[in-house]
Image (cartoon, rainbow, N blue to C red; front, side, top):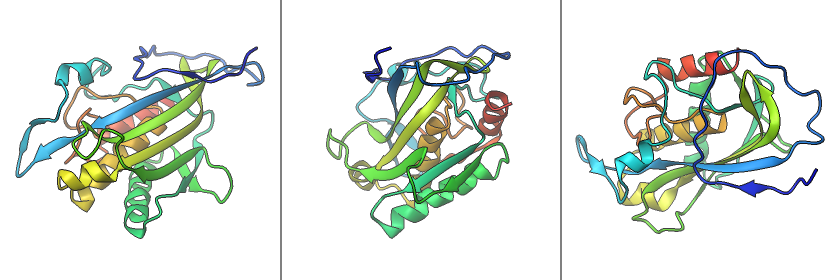
Length: 222
């Protein structure tokens, strides 16, 4: 089978509960790559709305109950390797704090590696400039004919915080950490949550990883 990577942006995948068997080999699987972004927010003391994007557009791929963050993908194992490659001690600390937040739930175990990681964590500048509508983005690849618990099985992920957008909208270190947690949630297979109490809400800024997000991991990694 042709193994070329097929690129799709922000594809919405419905999640179906239940069990399925994973294929014993990925040899014949085609890789599909997607991108998920965190919308930037203008903030002083409270939210003043979204930046250069309609909320309806961003909420199109948010599904399910606010109590359980939905998932479209998952890793084959609950032990997932990562590497931080931000080129900055500041952002290294941001990403490592985000990793600790997800590990705190006890569902997945993110471990650092010196080799090729499952998940690469870094920073970049938005190609749309400092006024871009996204403050973070995650690219994930998965096997298109390999399923586990009715979810696509991830093959790799890369998550980035857009430094220029975060700087322009005056994100604090904690707020950048929340963005990192959101993007790492996508790297673990989670989708956007309809509820503002979830770090996976499409335009998170103040919210950290919460119970709905751990509930989503428990459901997808059972």
